[in-house]
Image (cartoon, rainbow, N blue to C red):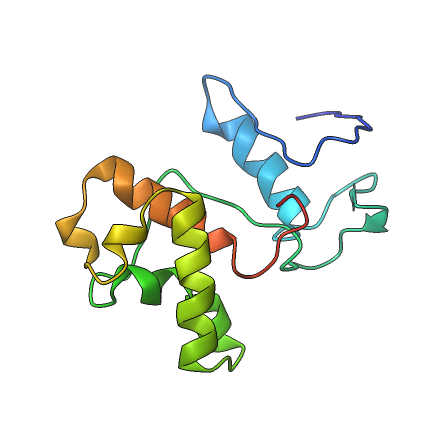
Amino acid sequence: MTSISTSSPASSWSFSGRRAAARAPCSNLIAGLEDATDGRIWAFGDPVETPSPERSLIFQETSLFPWLTVWQNVSFGLAIRGASQQERRAAAAEALQRVGLSAAMDKRPDELSGGMRQRVAVARALPCGPRCC
């Protein structure tokens, strides 16, 4: 990848293409997972220097924890931050409602279809508060 320049009020972006070789580096730069070798990365008016809960990546592979329930997977980031179980469960319930999976809250990932697991992965990005939502 040699150059991308854009400025947009869009609240979310997606990259598409035939090869992940171009998409992944760009996503990793925006997420703050890799440093730019040249130029600058900005998000929401601030330079991107490290990962931030304001930016979330949703990967093609869902990578859900099979031993956790759906709500525990969705609220995992909040658990790392020390949120109470009540706070985590409430945040997970809201996120799962947004993706149409309220009824799956207490299921395990192996009880879900592939599409449902992908929606859990989307819901997992929501409780940490990305700015696009």
